[in-house]
Image 1 (cartoon, protein in one colour):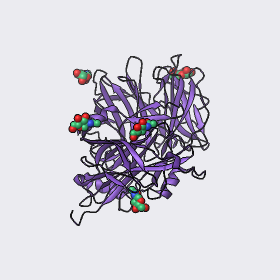
Image 2 (cartoon, helix red, strand yellow):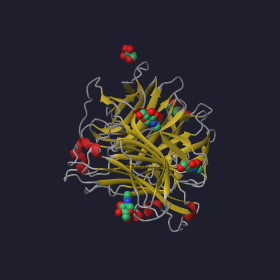
Image 3 (cartoon, protein in one colour):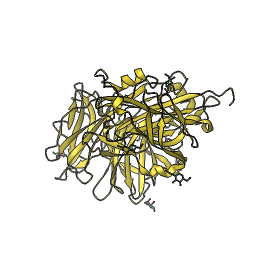
Image 4 (cartoon, helix red, strand yellow):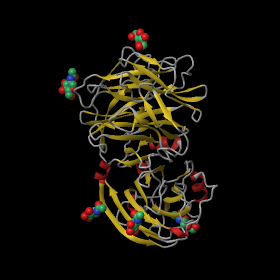
Length: 534
Ligand SMILES: *[C@@H]1O[C@H](CO)[C@@H](O)[C@H](O)[C@H]1NC(C)=O
Ligand SMILES: *[C@@H]1O[C@H](CO)[C@@H](O)[C@H](O)[C@H]1NC(C)=O
Ligand SMILES: *[C@@H]1O[C@H](CO)[C@@H](O)[C@H](O)[C@H]1NC(C)=O
Ligand SMILES: *[C@@H]1O[C@H](CO)[C@@H](O)[C@H](O)[C@H]1NC(C)=O
Ligand SMILES: *[C@@H]1O[C@H](CO)[C@@H](O)[C@H](O)[C@H]1NC(C)=O
């Protein structure tokens, strides 16, 4: 190996606390790079990214005439937030994408200062319409409607904005800076449309509720669908039934605040617009405990799946983003279902992503002694899909959980993977993933709700250059992290399984695959819209 090659470690540790036992078992990826990374080194190979510039929230995802559509918040002029438009990409399989022209950009007094987040609703008969937040001439947030111009075009290349825009404006009690992100609307049994808009009223987060007979004339309901003292501005609300055939019953309400996406489960009755919950938003229920914000789901009508998209922000500095020329990407779409316990959601990468799997390695029943390190060779460590499960042979030896370990993130930050435990909290640590300065090196950690007597502890990780998405316990706990190794190059990326506990663990099964690149290509169909850079 050349002397200029430096080694760095990205590592994931499964640390689990539950049922009075504590233990530790981990897997690790490690890579080396020959030179300081340029723009391309951190670019992902199978995650969705625009060709350049800033992206944030996914907007209005939908399936229409055999085509998946993803819109997203985008700055046409740079790698920092600003000048927001809706960019537009389409796919036939949720893996390979074609970038089209921008879908929604400022055109009138109701959105002249920006086109912010919103959602698609499919009307009866199949017409997909979009509600989005416009920043008006007074810099107030208002809600607008846009409809496709040509319903026979599966690519939905053009839209017309409603002559009635804005359809919703903040009332006297609402600060016009806190009034945005309309969710997908739903129809009650009386055929009345319902929609929620995120806000903050008197310091409390609120999902403001509106009703309409015709989708144009909206009347605000007296009470929000939900308000919460635990949130400030209740950003990017998402509200959906867990039964895909009903608009009533058990529902999820998701809110984005404090840089995380939190959700609550409750029962919804459309006739009274009552959403009954037993708890408010808490840190216990999050889609993902890492870098993950402003997510949105849609119902894939072709497969009846509920699919979750999310913006994964960079963890590097703004000057790094400017020199890379881009910032932000999307998670691999995840299928969301209610877990068996009924207490939490479970997420899993859509199965289509497995079509990118290529060379593989696998083994079973390997003992990992104390302090051992086992290389998983033969695959591309920087672009991989890894599934591993551990059998805790010496579970009886595990320590009791210390009651002060209530915050798994804190625990993981303090203990890291070099602290000897047996089974510990589940976590991901990116603090050693880069030697570079100016990075957000938060250590993430979360509990996984499993009984290790009944099942082995499993972890799946999708590794793609600067992102690692991890799914613990079959998707019961998810952690996404960004990593920027300073010295690494693809062919020398290595993957290891390690055991830093004081007890032997057994890898019951490991399957790992190199991943092919997704095809994500631009197609220019007409001129860039004329925008005035602010
Ligand atoms: C509508 O879209 C279809 C399919 O792309 C196309 O054949 C047709 O010419 C379009 N109609 C108009 C009026 O643009
Ligand atoms: C809008 O709907 C409300 C409530 O149904 C109704 O009172 C009002 O007349 C409607 N306005 C228009 C312009 O249709
Ligand atoms: C691994 O690759 C071999 C071919 O090299 C294939 O036969 C096998 O099914 C693959 N295993 C998995 C788990 O994908
Ligand atoms: C395992 O523990 C050793 C000794 O504390 C430490 O040097 C090493 O970094 C740990 N491994 C990982 C992957 O953290
Ligand atoms: C755990 O994995 C082992 C193989 O190492 C297997 O024999 C055992 O059945 C698995 N245990 C559970 C509870 O699935």
